[in-house]
Length: 142
Image (tube, rainbow, N blue to C red; front, side, top):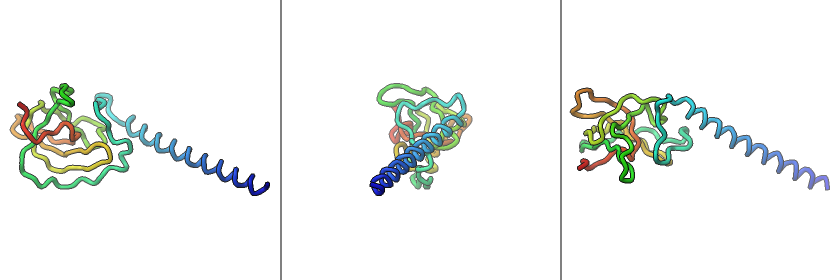
């Protein structure tokens, strides 16, 4: 009987630890989101749930142009596409019109949503920042 009681206590303790760990991850994620500037919009697609699991930025290595697109699933989401400080999207560092030509500098493969570090090309004020993959096209908009 004592062994059964000990076993139940161990299981209860493990359950508490797992629950506590899940709460800590949730609080970390919420703290990350709460650090965003108020003008950073939600995305219409899934973002990375845990930024600490995101990949390491890698050089792009391709000179072919790319373009910003403010469309997602056929709907215009951003006429001026936002560029962010990082894949964490804590702040907007600039924007450029949908259809703007890009030079891709780096890319980051992540669990749910990949990001590109881009620089606009040919605008009066070229900007550089991180863009979620669905807002980057490799064929010009028509």
